[in-house]
Length: 288
Image (cartoon, rainbow, N blue to C red):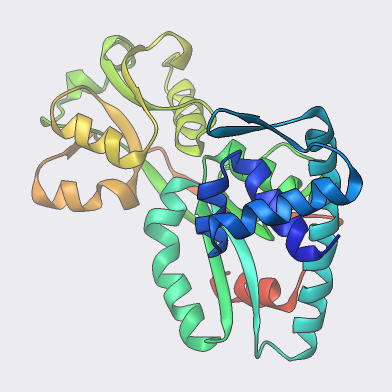
């Protein structure tokens, strides 16, 4: 059994799709199939069911998946430790952030970090706040950045930056349209449960006497951009980051309510017990 076979198995198993895994790994489909077949033949066990043109993990495959992840995590840790010895002359880090942060706040900072540390590769993925916390806890990413605190004793968290939620709609607000009664009965366009924007908005609404659990939710959408576009089209009211709505406010396609919710803090997340590379420390210091 080789590390390359394990990497191929893990990629195929996580996607249950040979072609997609081969494309991601930049190898031929036949090479991926051969690696899986060699593992199965060497140990005399089936790791996948072949169902038509598709593949599905067997029970043995599901059990082996956990072991393969653990082994490759240890290999990644060992490689990171060796990279540290080179004094940040090479290396990589895996970063995951919630949507507002990844799409609006992080990109210019990552560009500056790349300029300062040109040999450090940064891999960034996006998820909502709940997904980011789960990824960091599972060790799939070295560092997470989320909108709001996460209740997880396994994770260390600290404030990094802040923005502000703004209530917006396509037409101007007046005093009457900012009362708790009006907002309680208005049509809303919301982010999904689990997003930092949604959880922060719920807290802010409760503070002004609005009950978020009984709002009239016209739409629930999975991204800031889809919420903003729906509100610009007149679908209802939304609470979005100032980073998200600033261009639309300047262009006059959205209007802000005269309500201040105060700052919203962005938090960094790291696993308390996992090794933290110099690359992670460097990025943390750079964006702090």
